[in-house]
Image: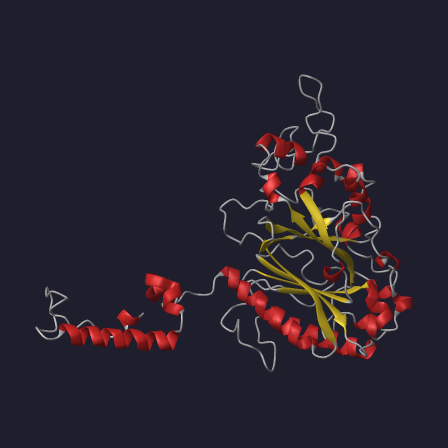
Length: 431
């Protein structure tokens, strides 16, 4: 950086040591030293940190037109809230809030009104309103979605216990859980997703600022997925174990998709019409142990090929798994405790989940092991008939359980989408 601040006035071909003349060497050294000290004083440690690449790092990126990634826009208003069936995004923030002492139904309604207005603006690629930080002012919407939900405790805090859905009953204890209460549950839940990290962060800060004196952050988790366009062969996402993850997700084109994922329009309570229930879990992957396994052992734990997600019984990723197929010795090709076998809907009374997770990596723990894994986010019309029976089955003998640890958990009621002129949750808070 210092070397780029003044032009080079040396005579072409001259020796750098004598270019200033017989008595100019000391002067040049003094000038260079002053220039260096002046630059260091102005920039602090930036030069030392950036090293010889500082000049290149400081150069702005060449101007390019907004790509389809930046232009992509999700709609805030609609039958359902965004961020449920929206394509998985590259960056995600999951945040839970607790209402502050003295805040009740009126303050909650004002907060949801602010949040909804902010989400509508940001999802359209507009500033959040007065006081916008400008962090993403030069970006497009970048598929931003903001989704809001209510936890079990919210209804007691707002005097709305009579409107609490039966499906929002606390999740049962599972033997494999190692849950941190400080990072679980909460009065309010917000999911932010986008295909650009600055756009997602901009929305996160806007939501946090809008909380004002009404609510405080209880916990926050940050995640990521593969960026759109990072592979020439789009496929089901991979998790940090390298496994294709989400093959059996229900598809919106399925005739029974809405019945599996969303509360019907005539459901109870009425304010949850077209909404859904989300289970959020921070699942740590014990990657050091997992990566010691051979490829064959990893595939037996999951029940699918690591390369393409195809079942071990043969075919491609979407080929139905043959649970009865055996090898030459009569041993089942897909082990009885394989994760993919246990989680099948036909092995759990038809229980179906729409999985929409993010991976996370929060550095290393005190023992030097990576603190990394999955921010598990799954959607269903009723968690008592979706997540709970599947997790109970996994709890009794999933081969994967040796390599993961459930560290945080939450269940939230996510109401239907807001019509134009409405805010999310208005039918509950003003009904």
